[in-house]
Image (cartoon, rainbow, N blue to C red; front, side, top):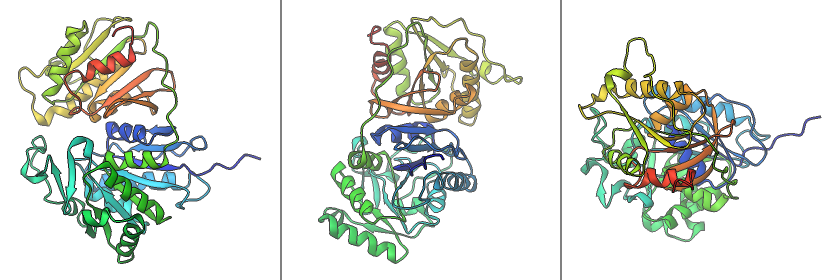
Length: 404
């Protein structure tokens, strides 16, 4: 007779791969990161599950369906379907980009309430009076959405979540003693409202997570990586040991993001001896979808693949370019360790290489998550907009101490 599996301690959903990896690291416990919402194989007992919905670029209805698919697949992964044995968490983008409202609506189906806290203090992103602020400036008064074609940023968290019925929990209530905050969250849930909690510090997020967990089954959490970090501080049991550096395995950096800071980061690697292969957009968008022929990778060196943006890159061509970059990376011989910048780039490369799951083992710096694959290689994922000029250098040094 087979032993009965227990429910995962946490099931988390994210709309892109870099966000999913960030959550997996912040939970501070053994975690299986799945790349397909419909996967149903139960993880080992005591392991959390994080699912990359790959829904950032989908239409709203399709993104909502991806949430429902993941909920249905993982509700039965333990002995108690949606009981207090599992904490359910949905990550949203810290700038409220993507299908935030559509996915939140689907995530709320069957729940008593969502407890929502979207602040990310480590990134200078706070919420006051229900308004997301960057360095104290309301999101809608900044240029943080400059790359979002034809879209205006929401003026409040509630607007981003519409039509979900919400109510703001102001900062003075968040900072009350825990029992009173829990009572306020329960009172709003009883009225059919989803609490949107102000927060400016990690301590505020810890208070929100603690109060939400006290409410028991039927309460789900939604927020940025800041709220995931709070869950990690409360529920974390420790990460597994990072794998040893692989001898004789090439290290391939794939940089598909259009963020300006990435140019300086690549230049930093080149200064340290990395080989940089910028690929012209025309070579990545061939009609026959063939990979770009490249020289063999140096088994002891670092190679960077990027899109040559010196002549400008049309925003509408970005996804096609990233797909070409992924095909080219996957066609390279051997099994290199990988550093992947940008959630879309990371997902397309792993899909092209037929990698379907990761096990996060460490966070090298904020947002840069070191995982391992079933075949033993290292994969570091990082949002394209994250990191100082030495970010990629720090990642390479962590993977290749001898190189440092």
